Image (cartoon, rainbow, N blue to C red; front, side, top):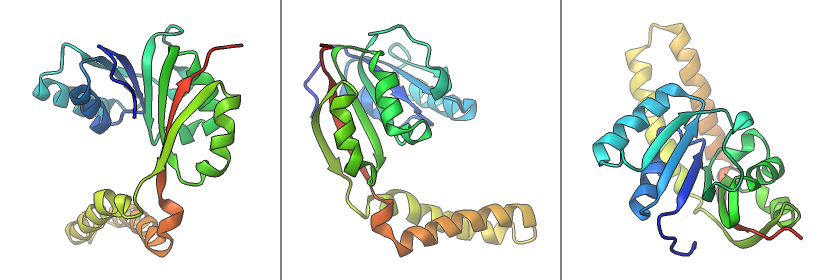
Length: 199
């Protein structure tokens, strides 16, 4: 849904182990910086970057969402999958706007409940909404929760005599059970926006 940009400069906020970061590198010929607070996840991403041959244009930086320290108007695209909830939708839109070049793009993946009031916030935060769409209801289940549940069952057997591990596994299983009971409440959406010119 974004126009083709020649060598865009992209910031991936809350990149984790870099699933979207690597896809962004494959889909563009741009330079990408992935930021996250978790160094072990960044280390995994660094290995993927090396394996994919992207070392010349993809970098990682350990950085908190509360202390993003890049110059104003540096990026063509700011991408954030599942990270904006940490600081809040409206606050994220406002704070990350300065990072975008004029007419730059912000792409955010957030909870489905954000749609109701999130769409109203886009214009007041200085953006033009290009589009938004909900992920299929089964996307989280197929891609994340089903494999997680399978792994939990394996770990229950492996650590059946370790109360500490079993407690953590039970917490994850409780989350999975909650999603099973109310799958619609746990779906998510993408918001695609363009920085509007300041009046």
